[in-house]
Image 1 (cartoon, each protein chain N blue to C red):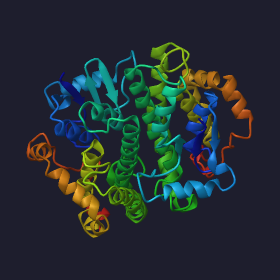
Image 2 (image 1 turned 135 degrees about the horizontal axis):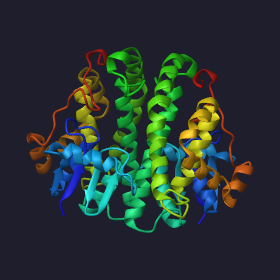
Image 3 (image 1 turned 90 degrees about the vertical axis):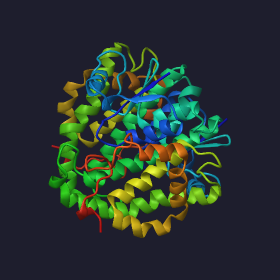
Length: 235
Length: 235
């Protein structure tokens, strides 16, 4: 079966967590909206007025299933491609961790859009500076400190043990994103999360991920995505 | 098995979605932190430095399992208590919907705390007004309009059909919360979501929910929770 991933074609965004899982698994997939007429197909599915259409991209078409919400897609893929533990307890724990990452991703987004997504960053620059200061003072230490603590407790290569999971891939993306968006702040902060940085390096060296990152399937970071580099928000 | 729910004892917050599911199911549970020494027990579990402790309340102890993240807890409970479809496709769809509700709940929270949770509302009142205006102009119509559309398409009593699910219970809570926090704005907006309001009424009349709402197990809305009534933010 060839999966169809539907996501905005110009950004990594939330779709990237799914792309990383599909790539690590060497799954057969097409990134629909990046192809000709793909955007039209995506909008059509979102606008469907029967059944239960997805709320927003990303969503994954797997045969007759249409699965929305990043963590939900990963929950589905993880079980099928060896990117999650096999036990129910293990799968629930992994989903728990991914949802915590999802919360963090939303907070990253709000550093540059604390007032609303329908306004430009330039129109909310003041609040964005305040929110970003809070983010780095309170939220980054809380969230990344949590994952650092789990890695210390695990004592293993990956967050739940010796096998890579989709949460490890997502944590790689978090570190990459913060490095892109806040190079100065992140440089200082990395001293506090040595295990997460090791994890990031370990994921980056995995053959399938390495090949993906070097390919043009990996969209470069840019100022339309979740992680944006705005000088005024970095120190 | 008696479930142990761990959540802040003074607020409905995110714990309420779990409480509603446990109450509808007439599950045997204890709301740990509302009892003597409960807060201490909760903090101890969060601070555990082995295994994979939860990131934040709410979390549910079910035998040896400790499950964090609201949607994840509901995913677990839904399958065990007839509050979710039995098929994998149905369960994934329901989880998808619940995660969309979770996103909305975070946006509700940010109406009064757009800059950060470590600051008082009074210290971010200006941005809060801006964010709330955006929220009602863009986000409420988008999110609630989506669920209204699903109810229209379903043509059934509940969101996925004739049986109540945990998503229906959560949508009840969303309507109740918006009514509490923004009575004026909501009064006007309700005209646009007649099916959701019907759903709210249907849930409120379910015997177990009705009994719960009338009991002191239901914590009243207040200005420490997610839904807060601030005059300056209502019209």
